[in-house]
Length: 428
Ligand SMILES: Nc1nc2c(c(=O)[nH]1)N(C=O)[C@@H](CNc1ccc(C(=O)N[C@@H](CCC(=O)O)C(=O)O)cc1)CN2
Ligand SMILES: Nc1nc2c(ncn2[C@@H]2O[C@H](COP(=O)(O)OP(=O)(O)OP(=O)(O)O)[C@@H](O)[C@H]2O)c(=O)[nH]1
Ligand SMILES: [Mg+2]
Image: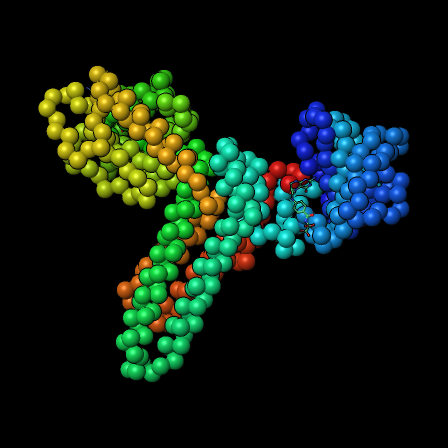
């Protein structure tokens, strides 16, 4: 980390002001050369001409001295007029003077590596920048300020405390373990699991708030999934035939339903298939179910397929124009042919999205965090009725602690870190 990095911090478009950021040991020397100063006082605002070979622009310049900067290194900001050509020229002059072009997310990466921000805070900064609504931006802002990080650290410390108690109980002779001790462990583990599941559901609403909700149509072949898809899209995006097994690929469209945006996916009908293309389509359908926010399970009969989904599943009885079908237990009954029930289904869909996006969320989160919390939940639930296996419980708590560490960046593997930072924009 001895290099000095440089990048525009603002978009390369014509705009009133454009900012260049330089971070690293040579930052003040490079900026000093540009503005003709040998020495810069930290935190002082300079209004100065910038010259490369000729005068380029008048700028506002600020020097943040390590460790008191965004990255924790020496940082200089050059606030220029926002012309992309001028900004480019100054960036290249910085490179001539010894800086290197920053990789995407490298400023944030350095802030993380220097302990200025935890991994979730860094992710929240990126989510804040890309938030698609004010509510999403405000919840990302809470995570950026440390709300989510605090929750994870609290869970870790509760886990650690319980582990200490488990280890203490292990020290008893096997026949001597007081039953009262096991009861207490059982209760404390249940409280911990409850805490995790509460935060898991907050994290899920945080994720939902930030993205376009994904709604997936599933069911047996020929029940009318593609017909409903086309109806909701208002165009013929999926092929419809009277034969079962028509759809194979996933067909996804972003639609506006009663004024709200959602992402709809049509899938292959689920059945025991022999055709390899259909089999692959069914595998894809099953996979997309696990990423969905809402599943519409279509059927023409009472008996439903067992659907593996951790999200709400609405049962939709289709083709109700075909005679005296009793719609027992269905949440919605529709016929695309006659239009019956379609507007009720649309209202419910838009209501679902609005409900998901109107909640105040105490922190924003990403799918990666949810995966980790779910893993922890699973590991602990598996042991909740066998606390007497103390060694296993102690191991599970240690492992859970480690998984939580992956969320905040304590124990995150390098490839995951690389992946996270590479998704950032240049200059962030
Ligand atoms: N011009 C400018 N505006 C910006 C940023 C920036 O880097 N530059 N930010 C970039 O994301 C955000 C503000 N976040 C920042 C976070 C920390 C520090 C910083 O210098 N921290 C030091 C000193 C803290 C202090 O003086 O209180 C530190 O943490 O030691 C600067 C900006 C949004 N606005
Ligand atoms: N009578 C009636 N027929 C319908 C209705 N909806 C769909 N159909 C018919 O049912 C047949 C199958 O419809 P699809 O939409 O292709 O069914 P699917 O569930 O996508 O089928 P796969 O792609 O094979 O899984 C077609 O002939 C449609 O015209 C309806 O509401 N009423
Ligand atoms: Mg189909």
